[in-house]
Length: 257
Image (tube, rainbow, N blue to C red; front, side, top):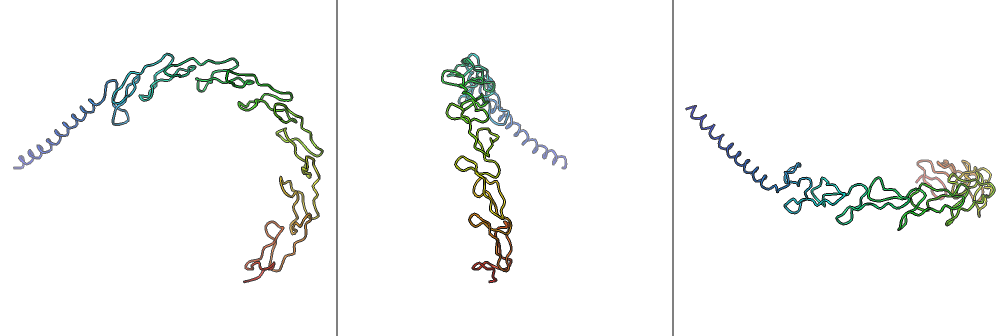
């Protein structure tokens, strides 16, 4: 009785395995038949991809027509080829890049050219940069291609000498000037800053060139001593005051609500 039970159980387990095996073979056969000629099953999952040298079009793989001076790419989409270094794609051809005089083949792209230092690209080639007097060639690939020497500034196609007023100096750029410390620019001259009593000079780019000492406030061109009301203290600037807590400002006085 027990042997009959085990035989029946083994038979029940065998039937699904055979069925699954049959389905698997059928599915594999279907996948194999769905891959077209000159293609292979995709390495990344379902589907297929064309072999190298073939390009996908609809559900088939067609041989890539490789022009002269070109090489096959690893992509089954697009045209499937690129031009060799030194050649330019035009239509379905790879034409030699024509490098004009005073130029060189771009080492990064390989399908275009750049002008040598001292030349600028035009519609027909590379023309020499005209460097004016008191100027030198720059490393910039755009713009005029030249810079003025220190102490000169560019004006159109020339370099004009900077006229420095008294109490001034050239900046690090060399093409402009600034007033010495303690002076300010007024109408292209450097005038001494008038610092009032109870103040110090500050080198600010705009506005007042001086600041009142702590405990004083600016009034016109002078610094007047602050008069603190009762229950008040100097604020963080030192040139004003705030009410002590918990007092509140009311009509110029510090009061409790």
